[in-house]
Image 1 (cartoon, rainbow, N blue to C red):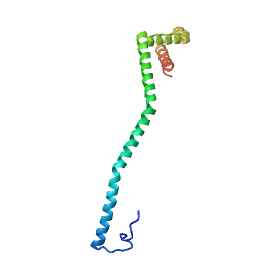
Image 2: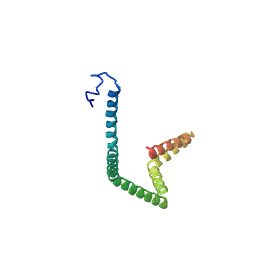
Image 3: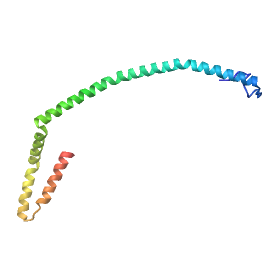
Image 4: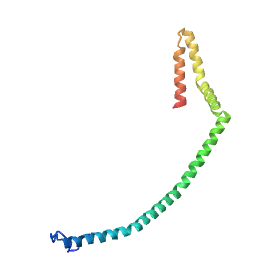
Length: 138
């Protein structure tokens, strides 16, 4: 914003009281004009915030509803698992499958240990535990 020529101190360096009064009147008028726009500006910002929040709420509402639905479904599945003792059943099935796959090897190893006469059962138990850990947590 450029100043009117009578207030441009780069063109005229005079600092008389009359010129200073004109400059202050110019600044005061510009300030009153800016302050008069403040309520309109604040109202426009409030409206923009309201529209933005409404659109954000509209966009997020389906996501929140879907998350709540999934949470309810998960709670229902968890309740069924607890009621049916499904985890214990699943553990028993996994251990049975493990025994089918590795039981014969384990029993064969026991027989060979007995033949050799060396007590390697602790090592075999550790190997079994590691295999179960890998099978469960891999």
